[in-house]
Image (cartoon, rainbow, N blue to C red; front, side, top):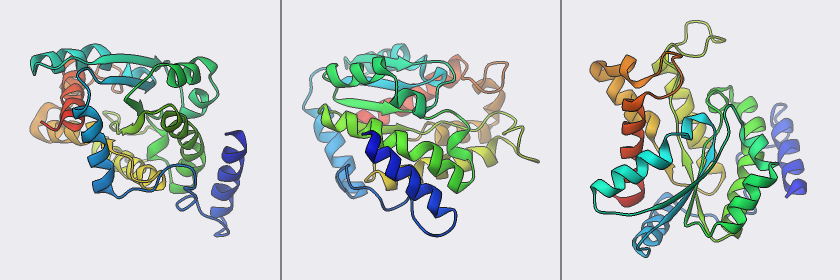
Length: 239
């Protein structure tokens, strides 16, 4: 796995100088069309009386195990949910964390949800690819090797955008985050995306932007978590 990550990082670095590519090095994960990836996930969920789902991410995922179980119960479904979530962590940290890897390998999961740190997917292309793609490939490959289906948790822009980007706002940052996860999905063989950020954007355009966030303008409020959990349920269960 470390050898794979090394060559991926070299390819991503060379892409800065147009000597390599981060977009077409997918040699470990199965190559599927968007339709095939969706069909695979649907078949797995429908085949299980109690699907098992592991969240790998940071504080944006803290509320999901409880909230998704609640939404599933409202629809008469039961799910087994676990988490390897640590405040502020990147996928790079997760991919080298023994506890996370142990949980993926030994948990008998149907789905492993992978969530990057909130800003990284919104970075300029080469920075995003270099920081995000290698650890994502490692984690997604671990999930595959354990028998699980990896999916991506597309998050949202911060309430006032990235303070490091002049003139940024929620909508612009959300668009960049969406683009980042779309690129990551394509590079990993078209992983299914849980588009929570899209549903946050719809709510924000309906005048509910402030209600989505805690006071820090980054983390989800109770309403934000509810919206995200419904997006997860719809994506996983198809309704």
